[in-house]
Picture (spheres, rainbow, N blue to C red):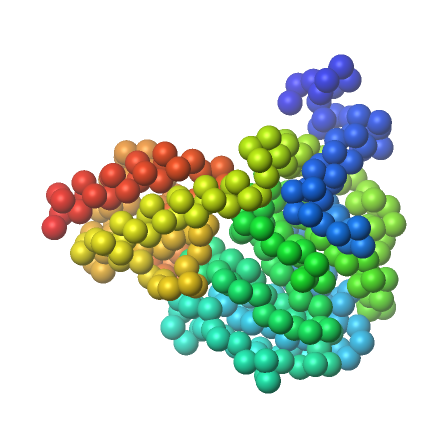
Length: 335
């Protein structure tokens, strides 16, 4: 933070066009490409604006042939993406799980897919509701777009099955302030005439993510995370650890007569695990006592209630095991 290498200055102080920072950027991009096995015909961009900016950037750049797109509504962020896309063209919501507060991934019927859609959008993991896509939809020639903000680098994805992937950094990549976009090169360059300069993928591709000053220190931190994952053995290794962490908590929830999971079956997220006691007073008591014991940010989203354990890549198995031990003691003392 105070001095990068022998540069005599922090990454926050150096020019984004200096040799030192260009080396940081190139290393981060190359390591992410290696970790996700990104094909050569895909470009990696480090942008600003969070994943929410991509709700508009995607349709502005890709809803450009037939002016329509397919979306699957699986939660709050998908809902917001749909609302934004409707500003630029026709949105076909092919399936939704809103009927039961998004506690499952709806079954997809290929007959409802629009073969003339410019793209097909999904949110791969749903943080608030604790669901994930177990299988990717087969969208044929229609590019699949994935909001991968909360499970990127947590499991192996075949990037070639997507036309574009985007993810905010703050869950698994680094600190808030960086948004990663992985885009198939042929999809860029046909943006709508009304597309703001700063929302033009092609412009950032042509300028190597540096049309303006990028979030330099955030990119540096992402680079450290990428190197940490590489040193660990890559995505395949962290995926096994993540599954073990999730199973540790889910197995207890399934055995417990006190706590219960709000999601069942293959739709369960490996990153975000909501659970409840069924009693709001007990939920509040649990959150208060858990916080005092050092288990923080367990309060569930207001639309779901209860509790939610977010066990992203940085959370160790030991932490999940300790949470389960605390839950067992709480169950014993309050049953």
